[in-house]
Length: 219
Image 1 (cartoon, rainbow, N blue to C red):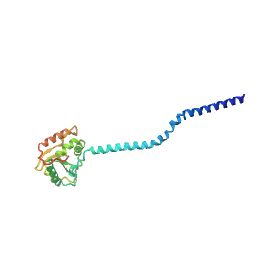
Image 2: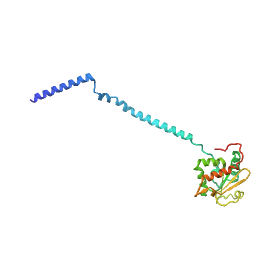
Image 3: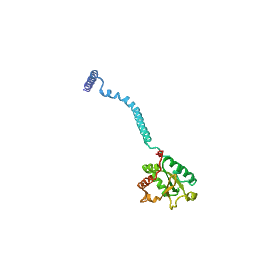
């Protein structure tokens, strides 16, 4: 009885094998193998694709960075006497250079009397530095001449030639002919800060005295 059962199983197994061979001859190999075979080349191509994608991203970022630099306005180059207070500088020599530059470019000399110790002097500089449009208008109108007054050098001889003033900083406006305007910085201050609109009004006021020019002021 057990033998008969084993013979029957062998017969069934033989039939199944024959059926599989017939199916293979008629329809080919199972589709699962056909679909899996092309997967290996695609897996091998993934690193190359990632490298290509990374190169593309780097190229785009580099292009954007170059465009940003190209679009940025050129840095403004100022004389040393316009940038900072220094007890070592000679204000008489600086004044001659500032007046010549102002005369050649149709501007006026904006004299700032103060020092590196002067908080309001730094606030005024920061107001210009933080407002590009205001700075452009200001430097188109004036050549700044910073005159230092401190314990190391009070520049008394130069200060004696200026109109009388009290407090620091103090501003004067001059051209090649004379010092024609004395200005207290408090007129520019609103709520403890320099007000750009008041500085703009001051620029407009000084333009009424602006000398004629044969050249354009630097931008």
